[in-house]
Amino acid sequence: MSRLRNKRIASLICTRLTMLFVCIFFWGEGKAQSSEDLIGRCITFLEASDSIAFRKVYPDIFMRYAAEASKIYLDSAIHQGDRQAVQSYLESLTAAPELDALAYYYLSNTEYHPFFRSLSGWEKYERWLDSVKSVPYADIRDEIWRIQREDQGIRVLWINLPKETADTTKAQVRNEMRRVDERNTRRAAQILDAFGKWPGADVLGASADQTLWLCIQHADQRPEVAVRYLPMLKAAVDEKRTVPMYYAYLVDRIRMHEGREQVYGTQTYKTKEEDGRSFFFVVPIEDVEHVDERRAAMGMGPLAEYLEGMGQKWDLVQYQKDLPKIWTYYRRSKMK
Image 1 (cartoon, rainbow, N blue to C red):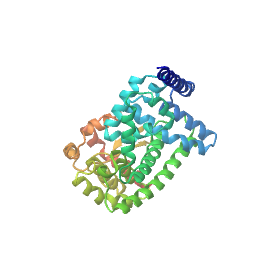
Image 2: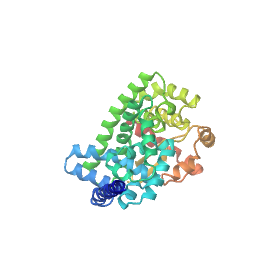
Image 3: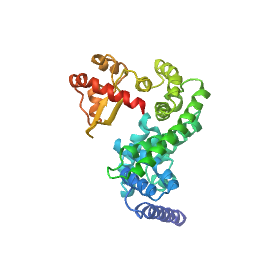
Image 4: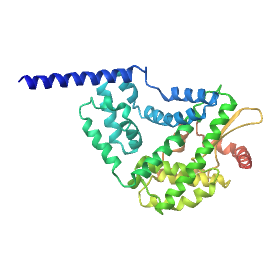
């Protein structure tokens, strides 16, 4: 009896020490950092010409941003010691295929493991991790997930730079985006060539599949890349191995590079008029009266809904009145 009692006491002491470690480790560092906090840090690093620290931080912006957009406040819940909320978030993450990269990002973070191990049912998430690690092409998928964090992290930073950001800092972010795009385009092409087809979500998972498309979509400095891989993407859409919307975006991007009308209305542009006012426009659309039908066929919502998400209104009558001016600015943009 005394031996059993001693084991229970030892177990209790270990548990309390573990929780003490968790408290010191997590709560001793203050609140969890939001995407806004990370953006601020990136600007500080750029102003200090610390490119190493900058490149270390900005990929994490996307993961925080994605979590916030999905209402997954896991970092805050961990720092607050809210086990119920953490458990609920982990359930949501591991149940949604499109959140596979985000789920892996959190569950594979060994800094969080002391807390995670205090949860009931942690073994289930360990099994989830093991299953993700053991699938075919896991090494390629993990590489693509790293590419995703760079590709999207630098873009989230760019679109969320405060208005007062210095021009030199903005230029640094733009240059980093070009550098990332050049490297990621090259690597995505190598991966697609190695497979000999578009691998699709069934092989690489939803997040990696989306990232491969984004790398080709963002190949603005090498538009011929999009043309080369469009047939691969179309075949994957026809075989239901990827998302039709990706094909729609790529078709429009190719047409925009060629100075032609787009088909699905996915491409927009913002410029300044002669009087200095900002002018936002949708790149000219072929047969604009039926654009929503074509979008629906690709699983996309109406154009008005798409533009509303950008804080813009869609007025077909006004658009048709503005078309001469739109074509003027559109052609000028192709000359830059």
